[in-house]
Length: 124
Image (tube, rainbow, N blue to C red):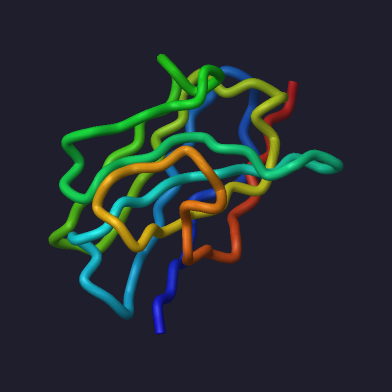
Protein backbone atom coordinates (compact mmCIF):
# COMPACT_ATOMS: atom_id res chain seq x y z
CA UNK A 1 0.00 0.00 0.00
CA UNK A 2 1.58 3.25 -1.15
CA UNK A 3 1.20 6.14 1.23
CA UNK A 4 2.05 9.78 0.59
CA UNK A 5 1.84 12.20 3.48
CA UNK A 6 2.27 15.93 3.00
CA UNK A 7 3.31 18.40 5.67
CA UNK A 8 4.56 21.95 5.96
CA UNK A 9 1.52 23.92 4.93
CA UNK A 10 0.24 26.87 6.90
CA UNK A 11 -0.50 30.56 6.92
CA UNK A 12 2.13 32.94 5.58
CA UNK A 13 2.19 36.57 4.54
CA UNK A 14 2.68 37.56 0.93
CA UNK A 15 6.37 37.53 0.08
CA UNK A 16 7.08 34.80 2.58
CA UNK A 17 8.29 31.25 2.14
CA UNK A 18 7.17 27.74 2.99
CA UNK A 19 8.70 24.32 2.44
CA UNK A 20 6.34 21.44 1.85
CA UNK A 21 7.40 17.86 2.41
CA UNK A 22 5.97 14.61 1.10
CA UNK A 23 6.94 11.42 2.91
CA UNK A 24 6.45 8.25 0.90
CA UNK A 25 6.14 4.66 2.00
CA UNK A 26 5.00 1.33 0.60
CA UNK A 27 7.25 1.07 -2.43
CA UNK A 28 10.77 1.81 -3.66
CA UNK A 29 10.58 5.58 -3.70
CA UNK A 30 13.75 6.11 -5.69
CA UNK A 31 12.45 4.32 -8.80
CA UNK A 32 9.56 6.65 -9.57
CA UNK A 33 8.86 10.22 -10.58
CA UNK A 34 6.89 12.47 -8.26
CA UNK A 35 4.96 15.70 -8.53
CA UNK A 36 3.12 18.49 -6.79
CA UNK A 37 -0.33 19.73 -7.71
CA UNK A 38 -2.59 22.30 -6.10
CA UNK A 39 -6.27 23.08 -5.93
CA UNK A 40 -7.65 26.48 -5.05
CA UNK A 41 -11.25 26.90 -3.87
CA UNK A 42 -13.64 26.56 -6.77
CA UNK A 43 -10.89 25.66 -9.24
CA UNK A 44 -9.55 22.55 -10.91
CA UNK A 45 -6.52 20.79 -9.51
CA UNK A 46 -3.49 22.06 -11.43
CA UNK A 47 0.07 20.98 -12.00
CA UNK A 48 2.79 22.75 -10.02
CA UNK A 49 6.03 20.82 -10.51
CA UNK A 50 7.42 17.38 -11.24
CA UNK A 51 10.71 15.59 -10.66
CA UNK A 52 12.09 12.44 -12.20
CA UNK A 53 13.26 9.38 -10.32
CA UNK A 54 16.75 10.63 -9.42
CA UNK A 55 16.11 14.36 -9.25
CA UNK A 56 18.05 15.05 -12.41
CA UNK A 57 15.10 16.41 -14.34
CA UNK A 58 12.45 18.82 -13.14
CA UNK A 59 9.62 20.75 -14.74
CA UNK A 60 7.52 23.63 -13.46
CA UNK A 61 4.27 25.32 -14.27
CA UNK A 62 4.83 28.84 -15.53
CA UNK A 63 3.55 30.39 -12.30
CA UNK A 64 6.08 28.36 -10.31
CA UNK A 65 9.18 29.09 -12.36
CA UNK A 66 11.70 31.18 -10.47
CA UNK A 67 9.78 30.99 -7.19
CA UNK A 68 9.30 27.28 -6.41
CA UNK A 69 11.90 24.52 -6.28
CA UNK A 70 11.07 20.83 -6.29
CA UNK A 71 13.60 18.37 -4.91
CA UNK A 72 13.83 14.90 -3.47
CA UNK A 73 15.95 12.95 -1.02
CA UNK A 74 15.74 9.29 -2.03
CA UNK A 75 17.62 8.20 1.09
CA UNK A 76 14.79 9.70 3.18
CA UNK A 77 11.93 8.73 0.83
CA UNK A 78 10.90 12.36 0.85
CA UNK A 79 10.10 15.00 -1.74
CA UNK A 80 10.06 18.73 -1.12
CA UNK A 81 8.61 21.90 -2.56
CA UNK A 82 10.37 25.09 -1.53
CA UNK A 83 8.07 28.02 -2.19
CA UNK A 84 9.43 31.55 -2.08
CA UNK A 85 7.92 34.95 -2.82
CA UNK A 86 4.48 33.60 -2.12
CA UNK A 87 1.45 35.45 -3.43
CA UNK A 88 -2.18 35.39 -2.29
CA UNK A 89 -3.04 33.56 -5.52
CA UNK A 90 -0.83 30.67 -4.34
CA UNK A 91 -3.44 29.93 -1.69
CA UNK A 92 -4.58 26.33 -2.25
CA UNK A 93 -4.41 22.79 -0.99
CA UNK A 94 -1.15 21.29 -2.23
CA UNK A 95 -1.05 17.63 -3.12
CA UNK A 96 1.86 15.26 -3.45
CA UNK A 97 1.53 12.70 -6.24
CA UNK A 98 3.47 9.62 -7.28
CA UNK A 99 3.92 8.06 -10.69
CA UNK A 100 4.44 4.44 -11.67
CA UNK A 101 7.24 5.44 -14.04
CA UNK A 102 10.67 7.02 -13.62
CA UNK A 103 10.10 9.99 -15.93
CA UNK A 104 8.21 13.08 -14.89
CA UNK A 105 4.76 14.13 -16.08
CA UNK A 106 2.69 17.30 -16.00
CA UNK A 107 -0.64 15.51 -16.34
CA UNK A 108 -2.90 14.54 -13.45
CA UNK A 109 -3.71 11.31 -15.22
CA UNK A 110 -0.03 10.41 -15.15
CA UNK A 111 -0.08 9.93 -11.40
CA UNK A 112 -1.37 6.84 -9.66
CA UNK A 113 -0.92 7.84 -6.04
CA UNK A 114 -2.04 10.94 -4.15
CA UNK A 115 -1.64 12.34 -0.69
CA UNK A 116 -4.38 13.97 1.34
CA UNK A 117 -3.05 17.46 0.78
CA UNK A 118 -1.69 20.26 2.92
CA UNK A 119 -3.30 23.69 3.00
CA UNK A 120 -1.33 26.80 2.15
CA UNK A 121 -2.85 30.19 2.84
CA UNK A 122 -1.07 33.36 1.76
CA UNK A 123 -2.41 36.57 3.25
CA UNK A 124 -2.03 39.94 1.55
